[in-house]
Image 1 (cartoon, rainbow, N blue to C red):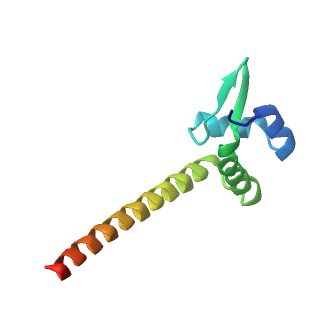
Image 2: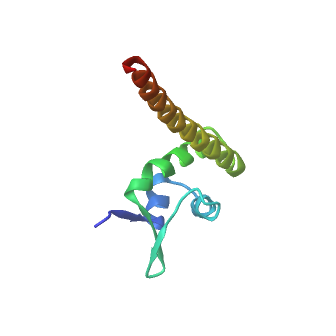
Image 3: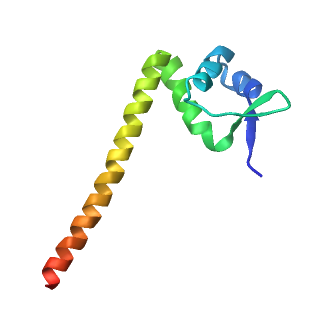
Length: 100
């Protein structure tokens, strides 16, 4: 069973505005599960939530800024993965070249 925490508990524990949490969900930055009219965040998504809350409340980054940063970091991670794949292909080609 996957562990989860309700939106209301998060708002209370992290001392954030419920509208901020709802905005994260509405803008696709967080995904929630709804059961019996209660929204839940999965524990595996807590690091992303904490990151957004810290950026917003500590660094005063607004929602559009959060979206831009999130998209840029996602693109950077995709580029890193593609780079790893290309380096592995290059290494494979290099080893075949050395063998031949």
